[in-house]
Length: 171
Image (cartoon, rainbow, N blue to C red; front, top):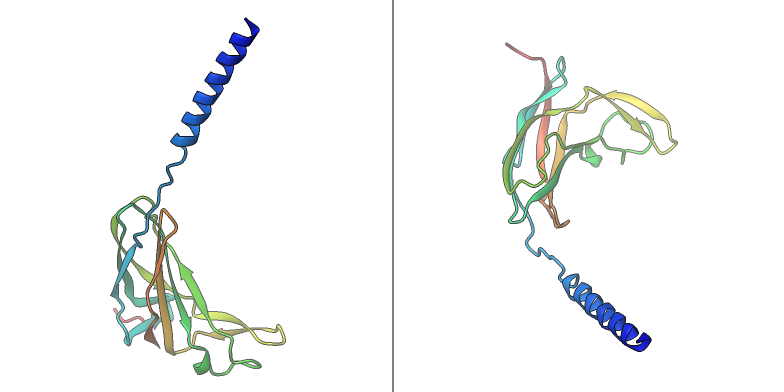
């Protein structure tokens, strides 16, 4: 009788173990990378920073899509290092700002649109670890954009150049 119970327990353990092993062996994969298409600004566009509102126009706009679902996006604007003026010490310091304003998690297709927000005064750290506050620089900036899907696949756009010009807001 003990032998029959042991045999029954062994059969149940093997059946349950085999079932669990094969039911968990399926791994979901997504080899399709998300897509991102930049709508605004385009390469070499001029962006105007309105010093009284700390807003740059035109707005950033892009379409994002993925066959399974989107997770997040980021775009970054940064000043090109070799064109920074009036920065004491190392001129490789640069201004940058990352953006992700709206939630896109789980969406398959979406268009994101919002204005750039850049402070008119930025802090720059030189090679001696001194922090200097400077007005935003006019000149050439790079814009990078990327999008990630829910499986962790990331698509990054090639950087584009935009020119920032300071001005006052005109109604």
